[in-house]
Amino acid sequence: MSLSSIALYFYLRNILEVEIEEQLYSTAARIESSLEAGKNPYSLPPVVEVATSNKSLPDILKDTLIYDPSQDEIELFRELSSFKKINNINYKITVRDLVVESENILMAIIISYLLIIITVFVVLYYFNKVGNSYLWKPFFNTLEQIKEFSLSTKEPVALSISNIREFSELNTQVKILTDKVRGDYNNLKQFTEDVSHELQTPLAIMQVKIESVINDAPLSNQQYDQLTSIQKDIKRVTQMNKGLTLLTKIENNQFINPKQVSLTSIVEGNIANFKEIFQQDIQFVNENELLVTMDYHLAEILCNNLISNAIKHHIGSGDIVIEITKEHLSVCNKGEKPILHADRIFNRFYKENESVKSTGLGLAIAKKICDMYNFKLTYTFEKGFHIFLVQFS
Image 1 (cartoon, helix red, strand yellow):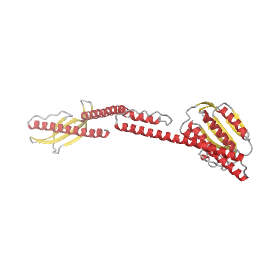
Image 2: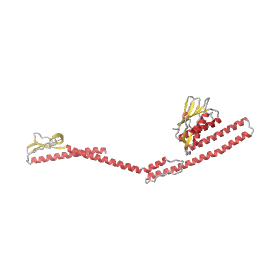
Image 3: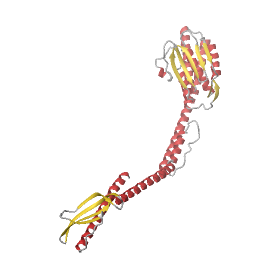
Image 4: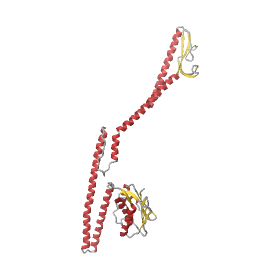
C-alpha cells in the first residue's frame, strides 16, 4: 500500500502535467487564431503575454517562478513559449498556468488515499482480532484442557465442540491420546503395585525360613556366614523394592493429601529412634519450629532418609549436627573429603562408597519429595562436613 501510494503520486502528477500542457497549447492555439483573424494582440500578465519578436524558435515548455500581483507573491508557473509568424509578423506567444493549484489537488488526492488506507487497516485489524479470537477459541480451550490434564484423576477431558473441521479432528485425537495415556498409566501402575505386592510375600517367607534354619539346625561357620549373607541380601532387596515403589508413587503424584506438619517434631522423633540403634551422638539445633505444608508420610521419609544417610556416612569423631530454622533444615556429618561426583549424588543407585551397605535410593527419594513440593535440596562440603540443606522458602 505504501508503494502504491508513491506510484499513485507520480502517476497523478504526470497526468496533471499533461493536462496543464494541453491547456497551455489550447490557449496558445486560440490566441493564434485570434491574431490570424486580424484582432489586436492582448496580454494578461502573468498568464498570457503576446509580443512581437525577431526570433523564430521552436516551442519552449518549462517551469518558471514569476511574481503574481494578484497573490502578491512569487508563484510556480508552467510556461509555454511559442514563436509564430502570423500575417508576416513574428509573434512570441507566452502562456502560463499555475502549478500550485495542481499540486494542491495532487496532495489532496494522496492524503485522501492514505487516510483510506489507514482506515481500512484499522478496521481490518479490529475485525481480524475479533474474528481470530472467536475462530481460535476452541483451540485455546483444548490447549487449556491439555495443560490441566492429570493422570491421577479419572474425569475425562472436557473438550468444547467446534464446527471447524481441523479443530474437531484435533479434539478427537486429543481424546484418543489422553484415554490411551491414562489406560497405559493405570496398567503400569497396577503392574507395579502387583509386582511389589507379590515380591513382598516370597521375600518375607525366605527371610523366615532362613531365620528358622539359623536358629534350629546346627551349622558350620561357613554355612552360618552364607545364610547370614543371604539374609542381608533379602533384606536389601526388600528395602529396594519398597524404595522403588515409593519413587513410582511420588512420580505419579499419588500423595494428594498435603497438610501442615511440624518437621521439628518429626526430626525429634527420628533422632530418638536412631539413638536406640546407632551410637553416634546427634546434636540438634532447634532455633524455631518449622511448619511445612506437605504429606505427613513423605515428611517422615524425607527427614528419616537425610538423617540415616548422615549416620551411615559419618566418619571419625564429632557429632552429627541437625539444624532447623523457620526456612530450612540442614543435616551435617563428618567426612574426609567432598564427594567426587556431587552432581550425581541424587541419582538412583549412585553410591560414592561401595563399602557402605545401602540401596542407593535414599537421597533420590529425598530429592523427588523436594521436587514435588518445590523445595530446594542441595549438597555442599565445608570445613570437613557433608552438608545437606533443604530450603523451604
